[in-house]
Length: 193
Image 1: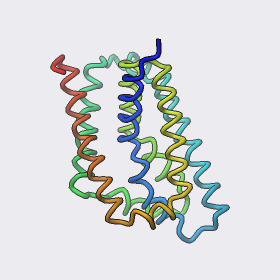
Image 2 (image 1 turned 135 degrees about the vertical axis):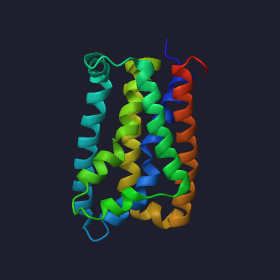
Image 3 (image 1 turned 90 degrees about the vertical axis):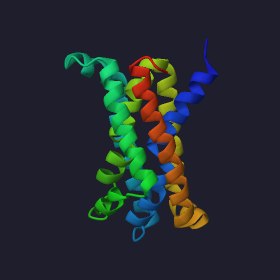
């Protein structure tokens, strides 16, 4: 039977880590001088690459862990540390990735990975598969990729609507949630949550 509570938890866990709204200003900056046609092409390419990476780790992540002899508990601790660091960076307003992204003309490398499917997303999907199974994790992954596509497709309009301060406020809230998720992953690895 489909568990809607697990689905909701999994959806928002991936939503926070993928940070589609936080990527809106970066995409708007990367593509500001491009035509609408090129923006759509770059976005489609980025989503395809991000989806390929996401689903590769979703379906084969457990096998990779097994191959290297890494327990899911160890991976939860490592993943929790990574998510905690990412969350703290967002809360403190450290935007190294935005400056790094300015060096690229094509949005695939900075946008598809690490911005859409980076270490946090990879960690999260592997853990979600262990917590909720393949069906829920696959559905929430597809929905989050679709939401990301919509947010970035209308990045210019969204950025004008929420502005840089609004985007920063949302990003910091997401960062706090991300840091808390990291702590929760670590606690569950020790059986404390």
